[in-house]
Image 1 (cartoon, rainbow, N blue to C red):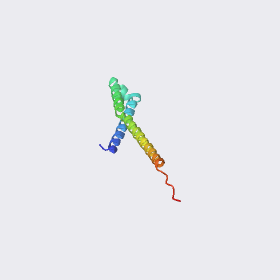
Image 2: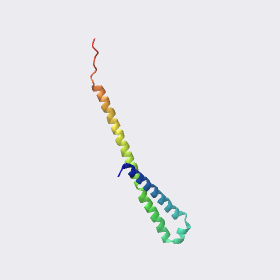
Image 3: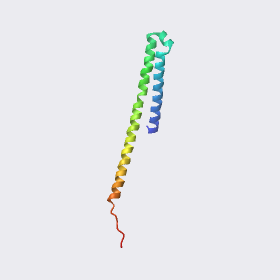
Image 4: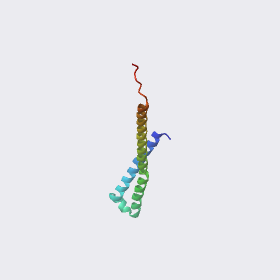
Length: 98
């Protein structure tokens, strides 16, 4: 799976998860209809919250992926700088003929 497709899939999953989480909180705290359903209403709102947490879990994976990639890029840039500075210092300075 290409990286761009994976990132889009994670973003959609994050959006769905946060929406379900918000819906579950709304149903549990503010909906009088869920209150009239009794235990069934509590179960419905709890399922929305549970699936919202499950779908929003890729946020951690996505952030970890970005941080690891950024760290690898920084290390690569640092190694390149060290190599170029070593090459500059290891090159002999030629004296012009007099």
